[in-house]
Length: 465
Image (tube, rainbow, N blue to C red; front, side, top):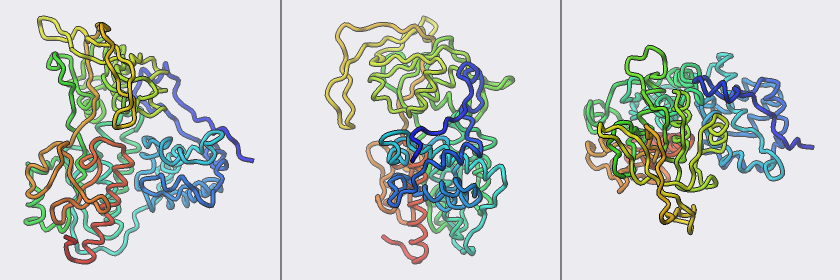
C-alpha cells in the first residue's frame, strides 16, 4: 500500500535563514531519497512524463533511485536534461509533473523535483562523467544567450556532434540562473557553475562580454563567421514599470536591478564597492516568483518588506513553496492593494506609496478574476524603497539589428510553434525571447525543440524555407 505523505525535507529555520544567503532547502539524504522513491507507483501509463517540458523518463529514474542505482538514475535524466540539480530546485513541479501524480489525488504527490535535485547533486558529488557525444560534425552553430534555453539547445546539439559556440552578453555564463535567481534558492558556485561546466565538457565554447547586435550581428555571424544555424535564447531582461507618478524618484528600483546586483555581482557581501542600499521599509509591487525573490532578498539585506499585490492570495502567480517561505521569514503581504503613486520628499527620495484597496470582479482573459478599485479607499503605505516586479520583455537590440527577423507587439520574436524557426532563414529562437518571461524549464524545452529542428535542417543540408 502506497504511503500517502511525502518524506519531509530538511530546511534552514526561518529566523536563521532570513539573515543569510545560504540555501534554504537542504535536500534529501540518500536514505531519505530511497524512502521517497519507494512511494512511486511506477504507473504503466505515467501522466507525469507528458507534463515535463523536457520529457524526462520520470518513473524510470525514480525506480533506479529506489534500487540505490544512482549513477543509472543520473544517466536516465541526462538523456533529457543537462541541468537536473538546477531544475530540481527551481521548476514548478507542483503544476507540471507532480500535478499529475496519481498519489496526489488522495495524498501527497511523489516529490519528483526533490528526487531530481538529489540525483543531480549526487552526480556532482560523485563526479559522474556525462561528456559522451556522437562523432564530431564539421558544422558550426551559434547560440545567443547562456540562460536555460541556450544551455539546453547547446547541450543537445553538442551531444549530436555539432561545433557549438554560445555568445553571452554578461561577464559570466548562466543568464537568469546567475543574475535572476537568488543564492538561497539556487547556489551559484556549487550547482550552476558545475552544470555549466558539464555543458562545456561536451565541447561547447562560451564567449562572454559579446553583445549580439552591438559587438557583432546575427547577419555577420552567418555571412562572415560561417555559422550554419543560429539559436536566439537571449531571454527577457527589460523590466516593466507601472507608469504611475513618482516612479523616477530616488529609491525606486526594478526587481531586475536588485537581483542582478545581489546575485551576479554579490552586492550583499561585506566590502563590495557599490552595495545595494535599501531603506528600512521596502514595498515590492507584484506577486510572481521574481517578486518573492526580490522581497526575500530585501529582507536579507535588513529591510522590513511588504508584498503589494492587487489580487488575493489565491491568484498569486508565485509558486506555493516560495509564498510559504516568504511568509515564514516574516514578509508582510498587502493583498487586494494597488499602488497609484510613489510619494517623495523635496530632495526627490521616496517617502511612501499611495495605494487603493481592490476587490475581485469577473475573470479576465487569463481566467483570473479582475481586480476592481474600491471607491474612497486611498491610503498611504509608509515606505522608503519601492521595487517594481511587474514582468519583463525582450530587449529589442537583437531584433532591431537583424534583417528580416519579425517580432510581435510585445517585442517577442515570432517563431513556428513546432520548430522554433523564425522568419529569417537559418535562425531559430526560444525561451523568454519568444514567450516573454516564463519558467526555466519551459525555456529549456524550447531550446531542446529548436536543437532537434536545427539538427534536422543541417542534416538535410538545405533550408526548410
